[in-house]
Amino acid sequence: MGRVRNYEDESPQGPRKKKSIYHTPMRTRVITLIHKGLPPKQIFEKTGVPTRTINRWKRDPQFRRTLHLHNRGARPIISEEEVDRMISLLETEGWKARVLKWEKLVEEAQLEFKPSIRTIQKHMNARGYHKC
Image (cartoon, rainbow, N blue to C red; front, side, top):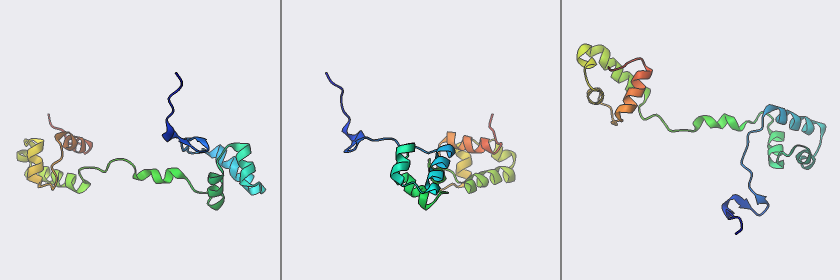
């Protein structure tokens, strides 16, 4: 039996390479070769960096793919304002609010969305509020 081929991972030019973030030494080497006037094809042969990446760095040497990574991940379920509202309820009501269960605290604070108990605990613990 031969190897099972996954055609999704291949393009007409061969197996696809995963996108990578080139670190400073490689970027510096490529940008130096660009400044020397070498064409992108020759730079590719010397460094292995794709010509599209070389052309992008030629247009904008400061470009970094990592700048766009800050938008990744799940959005918080509870906003900071909602956590502030629960904390202000604890501070104004005193002991009466301190003995409330997490679910009741959410009801009393009149949050629009009812998050899980674990989510409430995580956000309140991060602000220094703990239930025994």
